[in-house]
Amino acid sequence: MREIVLDTETTGLDPASGHRVVEIACLELVNHLPSGEVFQTYLNPERDMPEAAYQVHGLSAEFLAGHPLFAEKAQAFLDFIAESPLVIHNAEFDMRFLNAELERIGRPALDMARTVDTVRMARQKFPGAQANLDALCKRFGIDNSARTKHGALLDVELLAEVYLELIGGREPGLTLASDPAAATAARTAAAAAARSPRPPRAHDPLPDEAAAHAAFLEKIADPIWRK
Image (cartoon, rainbow, N blue to C red; front, side, top):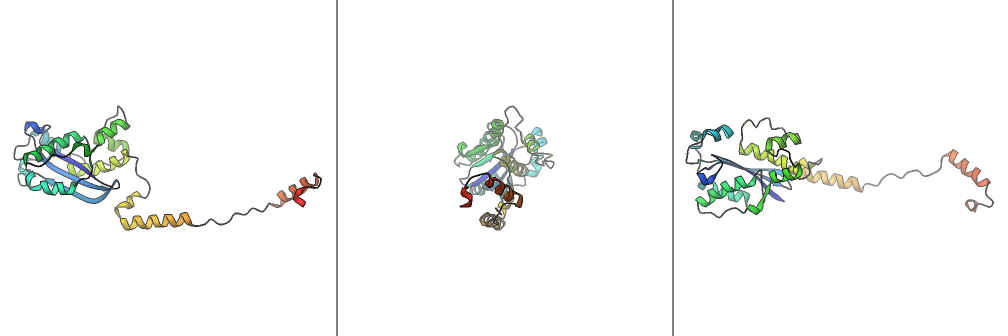
């Protein structure tokens, strides 16, 4: 099963107010585990960067001016996500921005129904608890010490780990999934071990047990055990 963990960084909170996407990052999961395939790009928003947004992600207008427009990266982005489900933390926010960008260049909107919202999952699993990414990393013991600012690529890597915990947690040996040959070898070894016959167990009575049984038979007239 293929899924895409997705995150964006933006110039603000509302695309209807003219705010734009400045970074997109996507990480491919196969059977809920990272495959190693990623898509990441910075984007020129063709506008200034408000100070509040800069304090969140540290991406300046000067830095972004040297990067491509969304229109130039749209097809590569759409090719990467294909038809796969999109795992997003607070999906409504990112989807509104992505669909605003797609509408701006005359492309069809992404369907909200294809999203898996990890904020909603966390709130259902831990009612009343904080559901932001930092809080979930702390809850699950995931190292987020490198997250001094928001960054889409780092955030999808952390979110992939959080998502795995939300759907049931990591099981021994699952890290082999990123190495198909190692995973196959592990499954083969496990199957072989399961098929290996156990050595026969001894069932003969111990000497004291045999003596006790013989003494018991002496108390019985014509016991069937002697026939």
